[in-house]
Image 1 (cartoon, rainbow, N blue to C red):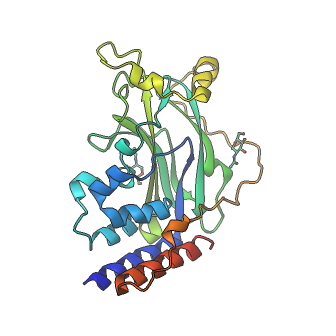
Image 2 (cartoon, helix red, strand yellow):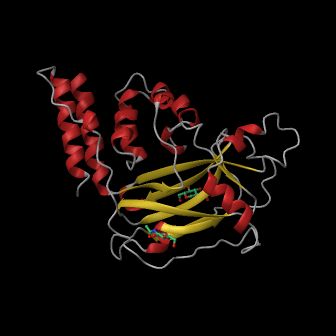
Length: 281
Ligand SMILES: *[C@@H]1O[C@H](CO)[C@@H](O)[C@H](O)[C@H]1NC(C)=O
Ligand SMILES: *[C@@H]1O[C@H](CO)[C@@H](O)[C@H](O)[C@H]1NC(C)=O
């Protein structure tokens, strides 16, 4: 039984080689203890070792884990990554602000993608996607194009107070590699309109976490350039060295040689090692 679990986990890791990706800028949500409490330790370990992994791979691991709580994990929202683990990392945006994104596509596979504002209480999109690719995203045939990984979105001007409280909304990048049935999600926590929400009891919450760069961008470049909220700025920028993504190296603690433990521990070690190798593909 325990071995079956590890083998399933191993199968999940193997499937990860097909595609990979996550938001690298702005700083995205990361796994942590709150995720582990909801999604289980193995699912969380898997993502801590490789945050570019896909939802279906997580579900394969979760299937054998008694500490996976599907409702609490809410795995189709931000892959189960929790606001509680990321409450110190909340961007503060202004209506109409242009926000630059960089996506790390570690391994491509043709699919569709969008970046959307999602209500975290209901896991439903607020409005239309800020940007979307209806086909051919991260194409295996033609390669990843710069506008797929380096683009800007414009924060809508009509959000009102829906996203004024930290944790209420995320900007989620969603990539579905259709042909291999793998889904990738990566989220940015943010607030908008903290000042415009008259009834908000805690205006200090968002202002205390404003990164200085964002604050500057707000005052200088916000609604001046692209004033129409519905117009999406999809600016591919001058090329530099795009395509060699810096592969996150699994932490050394993930690859510790078992001192002669149970078969499960040994299998788990093998899967860590395998995963480390796969990341260099
Ligand atoms: C983003 O794309 C996925 C996959 O096609 C789709 O299920 C989802 O509804 C899209 N999001 C929005 C806001 O359209
Ligand atoms: C994305 O665009 C910015 C702004 O032009 C540039 O500085 C950066 O090098 C680009 N990043 C990648 C990964 O292409």
